[in-house]
Image (tube, rainbow, N blue to C red; front, side):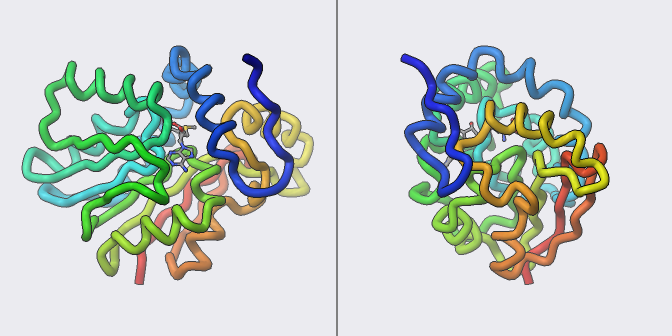
Length: 215
Ligand SMILES: C[S@@+](CC[C@H](N)C(=O)[O-])C[C@H]1O[C@@H](n2cnc3c(N)ncnc32)[C@H](O)[C@@H]1O
């Protein structure tokens, strides 16, 4: 069965996203390998301390889990959520292989996931569809403690000066997302909900890293 092309506008499409990641799960880690430096920076921006609880929102194959579990240590907790069974199965194998006791995997759309009541931080690493899903943002923010730290990164449209790069952004985006809405400022939904974020544009504004905290 073919994968439907992503809508150019509108809300994220759960069925299309599941199909997209079912197809991608086998080679996803290879495709994301070039962004490893950005992942490290994003996790660093969370400023995690031993014993804290961190959410990995749209965790995929679990490529952030090692950094997160190291940062919270054996007394901490990492709760990683993804709606794709196939992506999460890769994460499950990773957790099992490494023997990480403090990592918990939740297979669910973020907006319906059972999350710990008071998490200290949340990572949104390349999760554009989730950032464009108001119910998902409301649900995650409701579980975060006051002052919780956030790190968000991914693709964005380049500013006018670097618009020549936007076909490249489009090419990458259509392999990863089911809506291009909000790609000029993917973090906006979090900011509208009160998150105080500092946004760092990277690679001529084709990528961003936004970090900060809740009031
Ligand atoms: C580009 S991948 C990012 C994976 C991981 N964060 C990383 O950086 O390697 C996006 C992930 O978000 C998941 N996803 C998309 N929408 C979702 C939703 N509403 N709830 C849960 N997971 C979702 C997809 O299944 C996919 O695994």
